[in-house]
Length: 571
Image: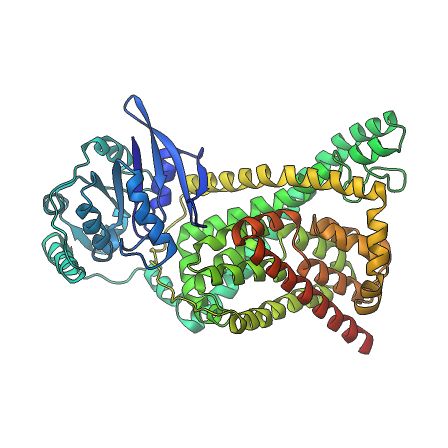
């Protein structure tokens, strides 16, 4: 048996899915598309059944790729659980009637039931069941209320006789149902509703957005830095470093195998960042440098999602994002990019057209530094003064705006208007938020660690055969002339293709001026993406568009680096 969870976007469908299946789920692309869906399993009586979280859709008359996939996935299911936002019944029932017309066994989960009481909305459940002819179960997925009753009623799903209507007839039927089952009583706005109104107005919403994003940024830094300083650094320094020292001694302190497993000794000791061995940098970079920021970023992002703020931020940013050929929802993958570019590029699947996905993925790869890279910029450039850190971020923001405007003008196509359901503000469900944090963190580790270890192995082999020295000689005129960096910086630029954060760390022993550090950091942030992002770009955009995106990145990085170098020389 296979159960499909279907409903409008932002009705709590994913939270219902999490309640039914737990955290052991699989994310996949629908064949022939970039649209993502999630599947898992649950116990139904004595049987194990598959549950599929179908992409959110407002209608079975597709207006975008995600809605087209939702329509095609109807053929995969035996039973449909239609998740409906009880606070916006009129908007949601249109899809319900379309699903009933498909003659597939269906049960309605009337979600956000608690908010109907808060808003003075009274729904006659018995009358709604009678009119629709299917089981209707009120649920509060964030707390688990009604989930047990929902599971018990899934075997009772039915497919009543429902005439096929035209669009206008369907909306008329929705209006008739609302008149029969729903009554709204007058009441005063709550503070949450006043807050919701203020958060989408241009002036008050802009102030709130700046405050929330600045606060989120500080929280991510605070949690990440404390995890590194108080947990991971001491673990590696006190417990792992002595082990590596003994292994290094047993390998004679040098040679090919030593360089592969331990890396090069810096000052006679193992340096977890610069040694670049499988057991040193290969473990330290993903666990001690990247993981703390991934955990803190995904925690903050999950809270913003689950409180209902992100859709409002999308609405607020819609006008600005249109200037760079995107709509407001592109702010979500952009924010993800500040944690890690890999899930950010994957998140561009929520955008409706290939044009939008190309622009968003390119801008993220060029101008959005990941958490690990930001940590290195703070640590290295920040030593010279925070004004230089501000120069790095100011430059990247300017590039994001200018390059986005150029791509918007140069690439043919249009940007669809933003149609999005805005859920009410609510306290985040900690269980669901922590489950989501675990799933995202686990997914990152499973994807990143093999890539990092493989990259370090390849780099050591290339070092051994002298490839990097040849590249340094060939590109020296550009690096020293256009960018004003020493010849040795070529190695860092090449390493940046594999790990940008490690590459910035390799600028430390080059005795660069503050201006050169700004140039090097900006060029490394904008240059060809790290290998993990490169692999995802290839998968999401295809080979041709990935090469176009890479060419844009290289050109933008060299032009921006050259202009910065000129500015520092003139000043």
